[in-house]
Amino acid sequence: MSSDPSVPVDPPAGEASTPPQHQAAVPFTRAGALWSALIGGFLVLIVLLVFITQNTSPVDLAFLTWTWSLPTGVAILLAAICGGLLTALVGTARIFQLRRAAKKSLAAQR
Image 1 (cartoon, rainbow, N blue to C red):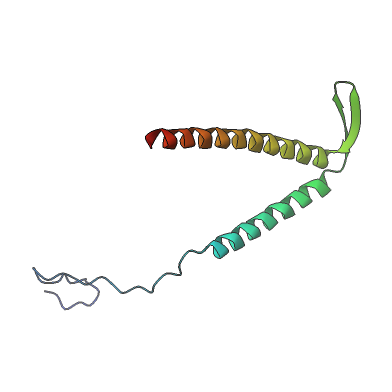
Image 2 (image 1 turned 135 degrees about the vertical axis):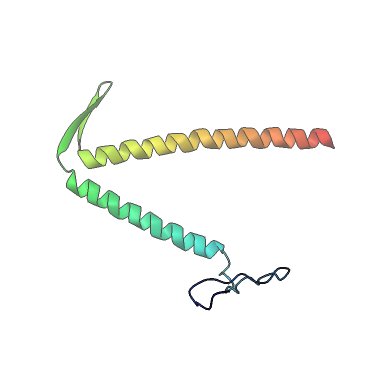
């Protein structure tokens, strides 16, 4: 064996090396997750606020016989909100459908 301290030395055969002791990790809590979600939400709101304030030129919108004018940033934000609401509506309908099927399946097993 070499006496150089920079060269790692393997433990003798038959002896297991002990793993290093680590500090116990802080447990995951719902409050911590909520705090992280709030911080993320506020960051998204700041980005949206900057986007809306930088896109203030008006744009003309038309739907069927209605026409109106909105700032570009507001129009894009409203379109995104409507898309999110539509997605939530379809997802909610699917969740109710799955719950109903699960209840029927559970009742049939009894």
